[in-house]
Amino acid sequence: MTLRWDVNYLEEKIYFRLVYRFVEKGWLVFGFSDYGDVREADVVLYGIDSRKNQYFKDCWTDKLGKLHTDSQQDYILTETASGQGFLGIEFHRKFDTCDTHDYMIDNGTTHIIFMVGNEDSPVKLSLDVKDVGLQRVQLLKPDIPPPRLPSDVWSFEIRAPAIEVPATDTTYWWYTTKLPILSRKHHIVKYEGIIQEKNNNLVHHMEVFHCEVEHDDVIPKFSGPGAAEGKPPKLESCRKVIGAWAMGAEAMVLPEEAGTPIGGPDYSPYVLLEIHYNNPQLKQGVRDSSGIRFYVSSILRPYDSGIMELGLEYTNKMAIPPRQHLFSLTGYCIPACTRIGLPRHGINVYASQLHTHMTGKRVFTKHVRRGVELPELNRDNHYSPHFQEIRKLPQLVTVLPGDSLVTTCEDSTESRPNVTVGGFSIREEMCVNYIHYYPKVDLEVCKSSIADSSLRQFFDFIARWNNPTVSRERGVKENYQSIHWTPTIVETLTSLYLTAPISMQCNHSDGRRFKVICDDMTINV
Image (cartoon, rainbow, N blue to C red; front, side, top):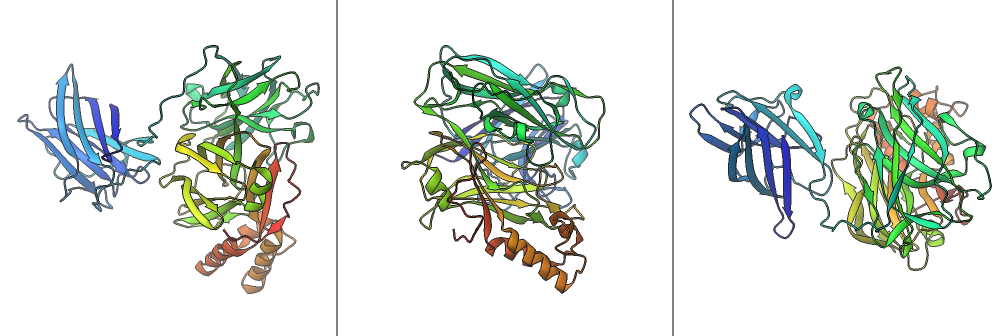
């Protein structure tokens, strides 16, 4: 089955053409739901009965997956065509139909569901999850012409050396290697993931970090599982991201006015490839050579491009209680950090990649200037950790010194009986927005977490109130796991995260903190 679509942004309509293999009679269901569920979905039903009569209906499914005809028909069939065993149908609808049974199409992730059947009449049809296909797309991509690549562009690859993936659910594999030797500065103008097809479900995300050392310093050879947190001293300098990929991402093509700088007489050739493997089935004996392909040019562009991390620190100080429908966690990039880390004319953000692990359902970054909320930097109301594209923004967003960037993740732990803490494991959580911008600055990380002192006071309160197993002698993760999560305690934690002072990571690309930032800060944004 092949889906093509076109968008009319002026009329706020989207036009679909669906082509699929077809027998003499049968039906097709195609539509949308919040996260790919067949229940409470918005679908169209098209079919041909045994008398060769066609039917096309705007429908919806209830909480049991049973199909109902919508009283407001908002999908308009315009054409059908058949030949050589295939049938094509064309139809359109508005982004927002103002119908409570219709899915509102936005510029975030859209979960498309589809199924076919050969019964003559689907009157009593109930959709079964085992028979339904699912595809995730961004239907409303910005209407931006693709950038042209320079005439002299060439490529190289940074790939894992046929490693054996460990039979554990989460592995961060580190591999140090060298870039091609470039005697003068070049620009990376495009990069893309190289995923071995048989390992599509194992590779969760990848990053290539440049090692910020003197050009004649030597980074030791390393190929193996990384540490749970942080890097050993000899690899600590390898932290500047020059390329990244996550599940669902397509190639990243940089705008024509910017490129990621590499090469030159004082540029170290050493890089660290980090691959996050997600292996919940504990498969053994799997070898992998995935990595990232870079396209480079000697024709320099006006600006150097950079990547900055926003959101929450990778720390277990932030936690999501069990059995939560949607629980919000927020990370801050505060005015004191952007004031010292950004140039007078600011930076221009052209792309954004939102990132969580498995409980993320909604992610967005707000942009605040002098107490006034500006248009959001990025939002995905139907976020999926299985579809983490680097997305071009509809227009450049200028972030000035003194601005705040506030990233919120809403997570669902309804199926989890125990608390979920922040961290690197796939069973733990992250909340990050990687923004792509120019001109490049030395501010690499602008993230926060709750202040240690406030978290200690919270645990002291819980210990005195109803849980004596919580104590200062135990670790943060152990304390969270010891709590009996009543609705009142969940509400108390929510209030704490909203009001407590924060600890900031306002970091240079080499990991050093900007000295102007204090560890604990109270914020109002």
